[in-house]
Image (tube, rainbow, N blue to C red; front, side, top):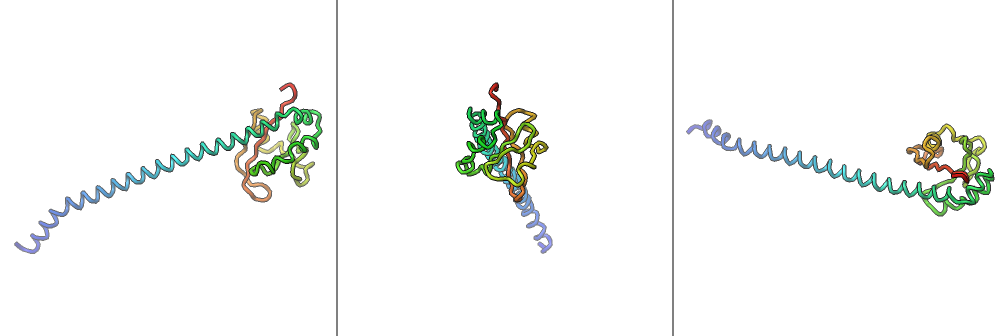
Amino acid sequence: MTTGRKILIITLLLLPVLLVAVFSILQTRKQLIADIYKERSTQAALSTDLLKAKLDHLTDIGKAFSSRPVFRQYIAEKKWNRAIALMQEVPAGFGYITNVMLADSNGQMMAAAHPVDSLNQLSSGALPWFRGMRNFNNPYIAGVYKNRQQQLVTSLTTPVPDSAG
């Protein structure tokens, strides 16, 4: 037997083994990629559920504070300083709440738990979170945006119903 024939026979014997190995590697790679996407999808679903629970909790806090009878009375009487005094400790009691502001039905800021630059000139009527609350007449959580200090924040807007509801 010549050397060329020996190489041909060895190649023909090894070729199926190489093809099976390549096919096996490709199948394993495909399965690993599918598993990674499934795991990421599961993580995204869990993150969504967790975020929804936290935002629902924030909405419940807003509803609880805005439904207090004394607070509603002060708002109805336009006693903004007394109403915000009731809310003064909210940021200290809830570390994830940085400020509480009160606006009239037109979106004009009337009071804040922490001073806001030029409060009298600040109008939220054109801001998306105020429009969302006005459109749905329910608590409204805005998308994430950057505040004046370039921090990522979101806003919860809660309507304060009058004594008629």
